Length: 145
Image 1 (cartoon, rainbow, N blue to C red):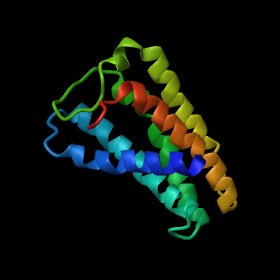
Image 2: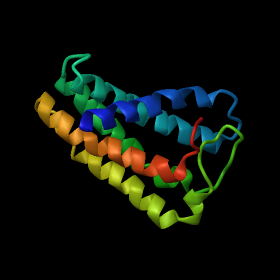
Image 3: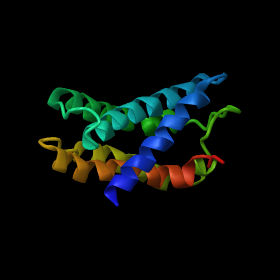
C-alpha cells in the first residue's frame, strides 16, 4: 500500500512540472516553483526508497530540508488569491483557508518526521509525505484528465 502511495504521488508531481510554461502571474509562478522543489525532493526520496538510486544520507537530508523549508512557505505563497490560466490552484483554497493551512502544516510535520537511517525507515516515513501531498491536492488542486 505504501509503495502505491509513493508511486502515485511521484507521478502527480512529475506531471505538474509541464504546467509552468506560459505562466504570467509572478505569485502563481512562485507557488509553482515551490511545489516543483517539493516534488523534486520527494522524487529523490522515492527513488531512494524504491532502490532506484542508493540511499545517501546527505542527499536525503537535503531533500528533507527542502520539503520542510518549502512547505513552510506554502501559506505565505497562497495568502493572495492570485490566479493565472495555467494555475492548478482551486478557489476552495481561499474558501476554506483554515483547512488548507492545516494541510500545509501537515506536510511540514511529515517532512520533519522523515527518517532515512535505512531504507525501511525511509519507506515508512515517506508515506506520510505522500499522504500529506495527496490530501491537499485532492481538495485544492485542479484534477487532470
